Length: 114
Length: 115
Image (cartoon, rainbow over all chains, first blue to last red; front, top):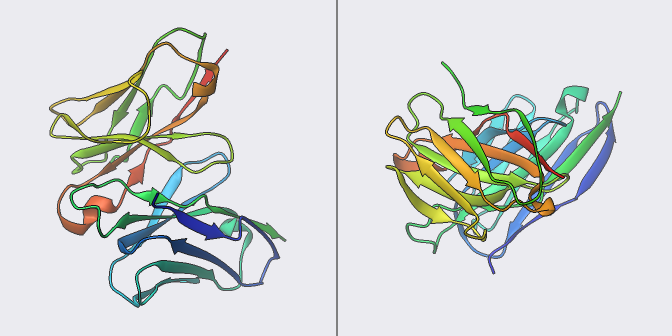
């Protein structure tokens, strides 16, 4: 079935180090979203990418959508303790037609040592 | 601008019982999706409601049912509760128009414990 793999599953960094999580889909996606969930919290929408090769930035966060629209990445520059949480990607398969169900990755949990 | 709200926050039920969870979408949103999130896992899609009808369903048994009201709020009902139904139940709302249909705004969730 269609699935989205996220790597790594866990990442432990020192504050100030960079962090990257990767999302790889078994199928071409029409769009992809990124969400952040703090411990004990709920997923919070960060961004949506739609175009092949698209790059978007939000302060220290850089999001990329691959040229083939099958992979995506989230890069955080100079991590802070406020970046702690689990980062999920979720996308819609391009061949899903009117099916609006998103395929979710299992998430990457980020821990930051102060 | 009110975000997505859910009630109750926490709930403890016994096996075999039935439960109803409630969700009010973010202002301006007309679509509600429900997810189940077990501890340490990603959200699992249960179903989505739009125009008071179930538009999409994930791999959940018929014990899980829902409803959407004319004001776009929604309920999730689970019958014959099992221990494995213990999880965080998340409601997410979105606007049906264009690409924003996939931008989901989550409520704080209802933590259901089945004993």
